[in-house]
Length: 586
Image (cartoon, rainbow, N blue to C red; front, side, top):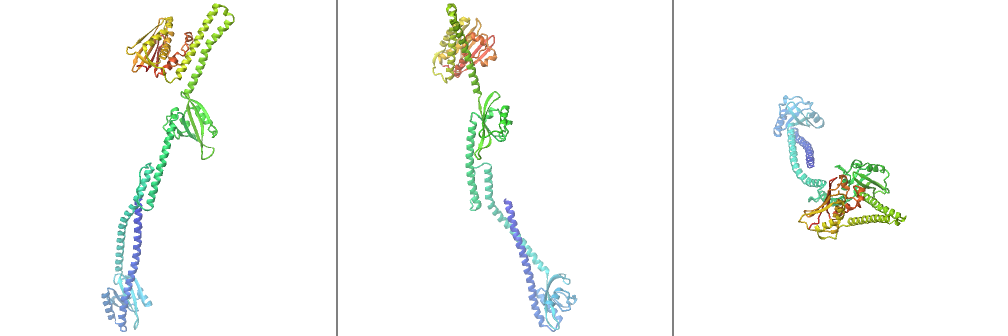
């Protein structure tokens, strides 16, 4: 910009100077020529009076002397010519040698109009001359007084004028350049500052400032830019904060969120949705949802309802993606600018995998509880009906049936107690009935409780403890229940002559319990489900052993209640080992 202004400024100055010079040259030239002509006329009229004084004699010698004298005095060529064109005298050349001048234009004009002039080449002088001729009246006839000056004098004057004009143009160029630099610097400096300032704003830098202390339109423009910058900075900061808040809220949502335009291109998606659908695309925004989410049910759902979505319509879809279950709520995005105008679609995705699992567990639990309750109740009802039918009068049969009814009733009681116990542990966030106890005493009590079953099965139960372990901080009854269930299982599923061992070790700040048996063992495919409610490896054999199917589930919940950990190692035909770590050491 500065270069263009500088060039234009210099061109304008040069053009003005050139035009002025040309006009000055023309005026000066005309003035000079006019002055030369006037000088020649003045000199001519003076000579004319002299000629008139000697008029009548027409003495050529006197005329020639007069011409020579005035020519020497005025440096002007003086020539006298009669009407026949004969030269009567000349200040520069021997007039007798000159040719006839009757055809000279200035001579013809002078005899006809009194005065004549011309500019032409003189063969006698060998140069271009300016001629002025004056008719001089007299007897016996008028003559012409002609004065001339070499035109090269005029050309010299012209050349000097051109030189002066060129010098003036050069000086004007230098002055214009210096003034132009000063002017353009003064004008373009604030413009450059404004330009750099605006570029800085365009790059997002709103912290800079501009200081242009001029009282003109540029100063007002700079002030307006500063005001605009401050307002933009304020607006963008507010928008950025709102955007951050919205993005934080959206990405903090537990559920997934996807917003599409009417062409099914993604305009918004949160991190939860990206994780849910395991999206690996680097570019997500602007992509078609069908190319991002690869799920047939979802894509079909999107295609089927794409033409019928209105502000009043909403849809819900349940899909399975990998091993997850999602419930998708679909609703239109309606703009406030135009009533009933849908500009896109909003999807809210809810992970219902745990809910589905809980529903499945609840369903299985109800089914299992129903089955477990129904079996002994059916047996009791059957024996009661038999007794009512007359078997009660047979004392031996009645006693045997009553024993069976008692066993089944006990089985129901144990089942109900286990269900209530499991429910209590599940709903408990923290065990408050905790105190300090001697661990060895607790283990001895456990062995005493299971000793009768062990003797019946001919299984030996013993324990081994590290000397450093003595006191534990625990709910005595919960710990006993956990160990009893594990040891009782080791006895039930053991072989006659087998053994069950309880080993206690210190592991950092935890107590590590190992309950090992050398019984029938558990196949690997059953271990992942071993702690599920009512899950039995061998259902028929488990029921015959009198188990409810809730023992290991209770063990698992007790371990979780104390933020512990439980592992199972087993090999079919060699036995099973339960490893439990509880943070209860003192």
